[in-house]
Length: 306
Ligand SMILES: Nc1ncnc2c1ncn2[C@@H]1O[C@H](COP(=O)(O)OP(=O)(O)OP(=O)(O)O)[C@@H](O)[C@H]1O
Ligand SMILES: [Mg+2]
Image 1 (cartoon, helix red, strand yellow):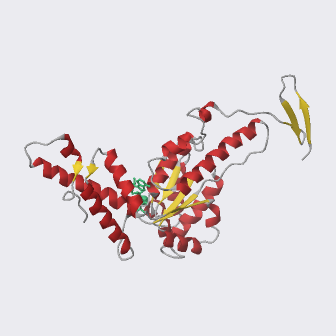
Image 2: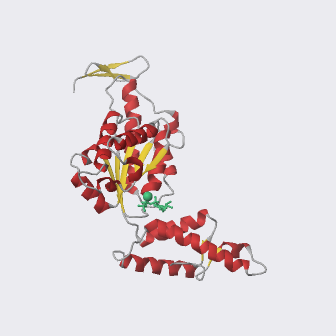
Image 3: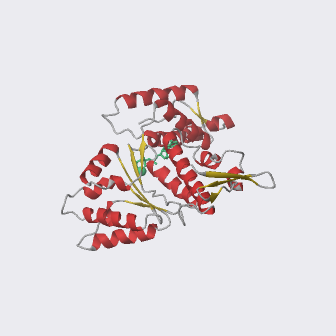
């Protein structure tokens, strides 16, 4: 690389790269603020999500890209708008909707989108009943989503009716808008992995419009236990050791015949906790008095697993 080095009076080295002055840019206060790590805030925001390492890395990459683009802009270098439309693939209860909602907020705080609102839609919100109706409905939905995130769950249902179905028109309209307004809103299509792959295979050219694909893996038993403990902690409850064993055993069995059942990962854990909390309340109410510990402890008999 051609470079020319000269020394300034203050001892700073001034390197000229390809006719450009080598300016030193400091990281902004908000980046350095919270103690050295530029990703501190992202780690904080997403710390309550167990696992999801790939997702956390992707968010950091997007954030770093935004920050560095701004620095490049400051020194007059070319910048590129990131296209952030995404595909989320994962089984029930793996956190797709929760993460999408959280991303809307995080991207707003990073200044990627101007409003940060979250719109969740499904087939019926996009597909109309007569010719022209679908394009209009879809366009209105995209307009509402401007500045925010449009999340379409079970996206493959748009392709359900085949060639003659209006769902196809919804897809085409979405594609047009996501190209035209790619930096004004973020479109996230979500669904179960096999169905999503099939859907994408039916619509060649669609996958390439989504630069970010995130796989939401099923949680391991250990991760589900961690999620359970965290949810209990947030609600100021505790599982007795016996209750914990009972839950772990049950999760192991559920995962063994996973393919026979419709196991819903973290949602199953949340539902179990909520049911158990109710059962615990009924048990306690039948007693005359109770201690703080009793008010917190979910026992084996409270744990409701069906
Ligand atoms: N990694 C995680 N850590 C903690 N809680 C989680 C995690 N993943 C999911 N949850 C919780 O599990 C529940 C279900 O998650 P969510 O509704 O986002 O799943 P989903 O993938 O959208 O499911 P579906 O495909 O059925 O719509 C929520 O209460 C969410 O907070
Ligand atoms: Mg969901």
